Image 1 (tube, rainbow, N blue to C red):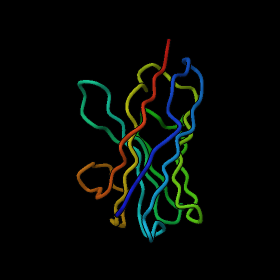
Image 2 (tube, rainbow, N blue to C red):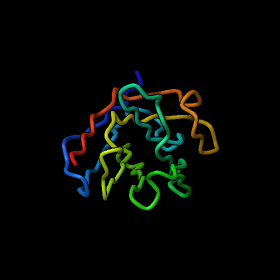
Image 3 (spheres, rainbow, N blue to C red):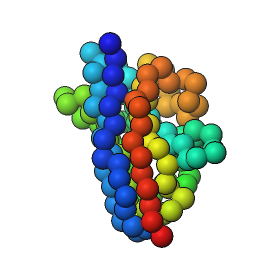
Length: 124
């Protein structure tokens, strides 16, 4: 059974940092493109960042570019999202997701597996 488990969310002041982790039970984690998405109350789930199977390519939403960094450790079956200079508008439930698509998709429906999410709250 495939499981993606996010952790690292919490309450932080604006300008602060958080590091999210996503532990994957995928047997062949290194075969998957991994992504981070977020969903705020009353809004659609939106793309945040994604990383290719080998970490060689990354892609970010314009809203987080320069502040967030996605990375992965295939030896540990873990995906990360370092979030710096957090803003109140970054507050949301953050989800990690996995897809076997070779490209780096930004559309949620392309991703096959999803975690349960971790809450990020940013106070102003």
